[in-house]
Amino acid sequence: MEKWDFSEIIKSSGLKNTKHRISILEALERSDRPVSADQLYTELRLRKMSANLSTVYRTLETLCEKNLVSKVNIPEGDRTFFEFNRMVHKHYLVCLSCKKFLAIEHCPLRNYEKTLEEKTDFTITGHRLNVFGYCPECRQKEDPVNAL
View 1 (cartoon, rainbow, N blue to C red):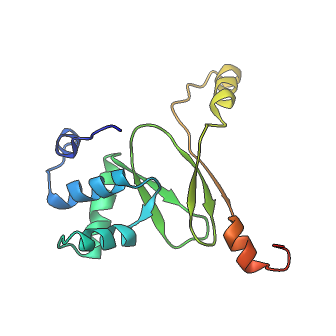
View 2: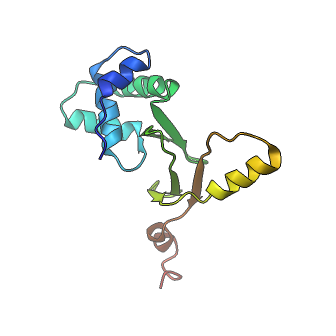
């Protein structure tokens, strides 16, 4: 597991080191899936950090602007989720009901990217893929008759 020097990462991005920035990056790095600002706020409070929700949102926006944090939006959802940008791309299956994220192990677009580059002479530098649907637990809650 890689050890990150968040003070150096923040400094090299041109930002001032603050305890909130470091704590938020640490919390995001510990998570194996994107989390909401509310979840981060709760974690900070559990760790006895004095922060309010608006500070968490402002800090996340600043970290996103510096590409240290990535946003994941859910269609027709009212919440945005955030994850530490480890500079490796990830893909997720996202449940539209419970908002659960399940990482997709292998990139299904790697070969398609190569084909696109060959056909279009376009240099592809990255992509995002999130697949939305309903997890088995939520489907079972919605339609218990068909879950049998």
